[in-house]
Image (cartoon, rainbow, N blue to C red; front, side):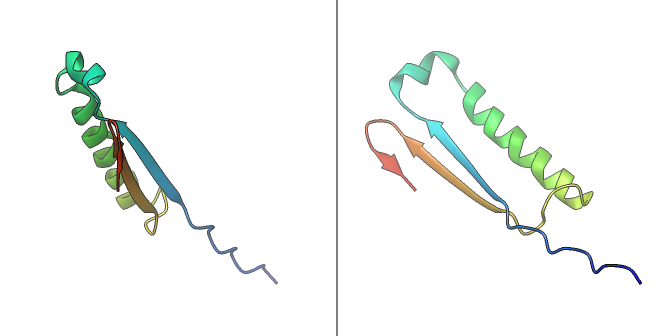
Length: 67
């Protein structure tokens, strides 16, 4: 008799992105890095490596926080 597979714990992936003026010198690099991260996560999810039911939250901040 084999044990039933355990249910996966939900995965929360939270990104906190700095939009303050101190990031201006980096140009598009921060935005591109976030986009690359999300593309990699999507590919890995499709390859059944990561949790397809993961919840992604992106928060940005400068002088205030936006959801």
